[in-house]
Image (cartoon, rainbow, N blue to C red; front, side, top):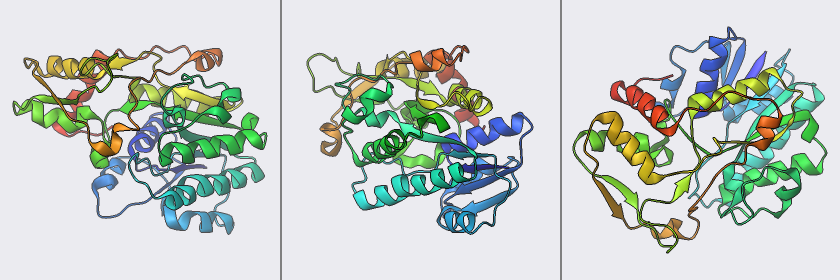
Length: 320
């Protein structure tokens, strides 16, 4: 039995697809479904049961779920602009601790989602060495909630009993429900098709030209391959970066989209909202040495190739 929290979400539903592709369907999916379209991510997927997130821990801790071998904990609030600290602590930190403690007591493998948001402004780099974790200073409460759990894992010497992933900028099918938090590729696809220019944020630093702010963009198909590798090799425990190891600019993303659509590039640079100016990351790039040391050798798709593949899904509103 596998428990997959956040299983109706973006990365979770894609990983559910991957498990199904490998013939695994004895899965309990946990998520929060409401009036939004997130439920569509589950269409065509195979799983044993679905439990609403708010009810799940009570059911689990009451001993009503038996035979759990693995827990993949991807469920969390990922908003980078929400400022409700109490909610983040309860939803991302306390919930994760309770679930991890249950997994350890039951000797179930535990895989969870951390975030590159733990690195803050990148002043200390993007090295996933455990020794650097206590020094990191996230720029928002989302990143801090993820760091708190990472630190709890490290401080309680649990690092050899689980796998955590610091996801960088993941994009791809099944993110349609994420509204403001979906990738710019998903946000701007219909605009570009309609002849509306690509709009990117201006740069407010002299060392970065307009649109040349960089991110480590990773296609969700690549992300779930890494996840599945560690799912099959739980002995390779640790907290790992999950990006490509190559930073690319927003201009690169825009040009890849124009190329995929066969449209002449037109880019406008707009003012950045005041509420994100002070927490905006100008550069992220995952150091991937630890993943390579774990003998994961599959190559990542080039940004242009991944964007072209994704645009094929966006054209039809298709899901993974």
